[in-house]
View (cartoon, rainbow, N blue to C red):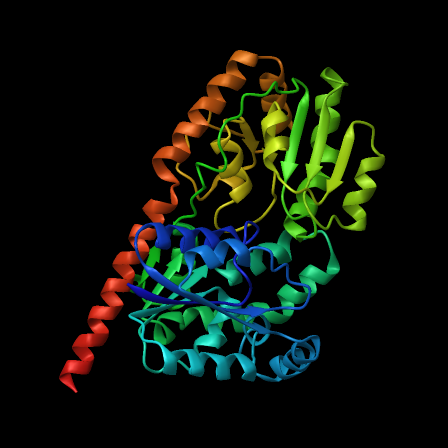
Length: 401
């Protein structure tokens, strides 16, 4: 199919879902044209790979001044601020130019931030990838976020986001989400159940693959973007609530916190003995390969935790909270270990640190799980059926006119 892929940012190894969708669409023979908004400070290095997979790439810079204006106007509108953030007359102009110069079978629109970018599309059927339910996330942020700024944003935007998500299927014929929980949330808000499909995240099994290196037997690793409030809360819980229980028995256990843009609060955690905060690294894989155990102890979150899938793909055994595992079909105790409390998580960590055999068994089973359930091919095949359905309905409506 000829797919116009619209994104409010540049797909990349950080924005792993659209990046791998495009790559997999290319490998499955589809023709993808990417039209992306480029926020200030956006890393554009992923465009080198994307150019290999896309028929054409069009980018539109998004200025800080436009974002500030959008913020003010957004407060006065009925749209969520997350959606109004991306309002861009320049993007609309470029979109109309692309539509006039090329023909497409379907448009794929990415994320709540991208929803407003699709408003001027009148000549194409659209599949909207909501990714997660943002109102579900905001509800969890209000309960558990570690800082006032995050809770304030959730307070301002929660009601209008709920209204917007309740009408998603009035705006878009087909909507994708990463998990059944997100799907049920959209349905409960008023969106039509039959138009919402679960399209899970996958993991690049060729990129994230077990490595023949010696693991450090007392090293733990937490990976992720360390400016994201849910990750900040998770590592604060790790250092202050969970690791003290581990250090009582294994005082030499090391915790590596790996990821870009650590906040000041995260950087301060490195003052604790045996805690290392790396900041941005060129490649997460060596840290996952060297660790004895990978951790994902988020208090709150929605959708799928990519950090869990990436560690499992590298056969690194994972210990996580229920929130990090809620969208997966894993078997606790067989291919992952899930702890309901700080004490339970610490006990799982100590169990694995004390048993190389169990680490190997859980790690191997984790790799097998992602090979079976979390491939990008599997996800894109669902998208293909959604594209075909909206394109067929579009043709039938046109024929009846």
